Amino acid sequence: MTDMPTEVAKVRRMIEDYPVEDYITAALTDTTSTTVTVNDVSLWKRGQSWEVQDGSGTNAEAFFVRSVDSENDQATVKRGHRGSTATIHSVNAVTFLEPRFSYSRIAEAYSQILDVELYPLGVYEIVEHEITSSDTTNTYAAPTAQCEEFLEVYQRIATTDPKLQITDYTRKLRNADPDLWVTGKVANIYENYGVGGTDIFYVNCAHKLSISTITEAQASGVRARVAALLLLWEDAKRTAGPINQGDQSVEPTSMARLAREFQSQFRQWAEHEADYLKSQYPPKRVFLRSG
Image (cartoon, rainbow, N blue to C red; front, top):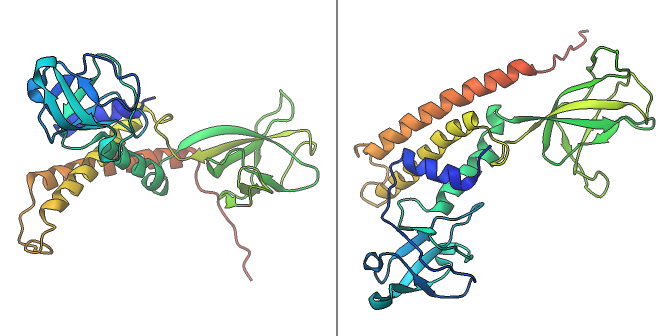
């Protein structure tokens, strides 16, 4: 398990983003105070942006420095700079001077990969659920809204029974009206070895990975993709001008080359991870009747 602050710190190390550091020497106990007391006020200059390294989720507050009071080791700042959300900060909270990539930018890249990229590549989390069978319908609401597909459905009617594999069910879940189906997704299970309304289906579902469920091994692969995205986004700025735009003679920078290396690492990891998951639950075979 991991969390976003941990992942942001690890990605920054990968891309060697080591900004100037300072820390707060007096707690900010509300979201409106604009006076910040710091350890080394000589580092703080009017017009700078400082990011507080106690963020959570996708937010780490940034300050914009409006003035500096050197005698009292204080700076007057604008709270919630660059779209961040103002929050409270404890004594000794570390601050970074204009990091190469903001916390929110790294979190955005991480969330994009988890939400959009991994599942289509066949990388997901396997979660076990139970569904009570019905004696009136073959259509069931997904156990949770996070279920993307049923990988396996089975029953065990008595404790001495072997695993009774269900083969006739819809693997891909369909969207449905949540007023009718509470999770907003439905599937059909057409077999039942037990008593409808009493016996249980055991279901292994594919869920998209999230920051709270990803393993360290998976996170290391995702970090490579995050680093590649960040470097490519930064390199795009270099070639975005009217002179270089579309010019194939522009030599790739070291950032672009490093991004390719990270992307290659990610691709190798994703292929290996997808192959492993596919071996656990191979695609269902469908036999078509000829003639």
